[in-house]
Length: 194
Image 1: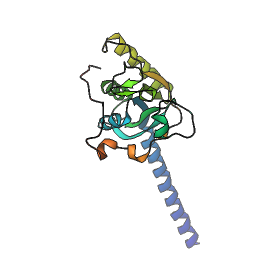
Image 2: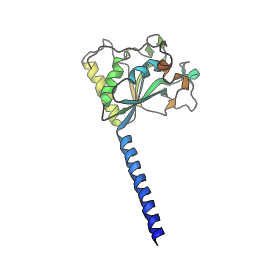
Image 3: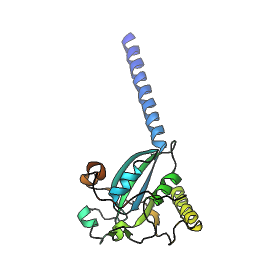
Image 4: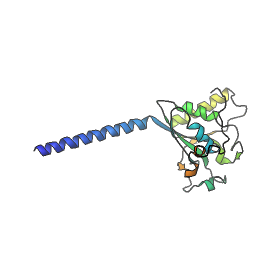
């Protein structure tokens, strides 16, 4: 009888530990938000976005098309609908989506259609791929605000569209400028009041 009682106590304790761990993971997930940003070559975008307070993770990849098989060799031709994109995860207790998007507009030129610096083609377009209606509305409102304040001399070409399937880029693209500090980038932070 004592053995059965001991087994019940042990399993009850493990169940309680598991429940607490599940609750903790759920709370941690609830405070992390993800947005997908495209604005030219993803190497420079990732390098700058990762440095922002509250950003917990970044990954480069491709978004904007539903094709099942995607590679850099295919995307770089400009013949797909994919854009070089950065997946940005951030802690909502330390920053917010508006801050992330405002910084996004500071580090690329959203007025050049399908181009950033020397990079030309729709794979280098400016785009915000949203995961929720709230993200969509916030992005659209920020674009309207920037337009109204005439922060840029030309119209903003940034597309705001629903996120499609995320396609992680090849490993050699991940954290490229950390691995290659003198590598190519056309991104820099502009002194804009957003």
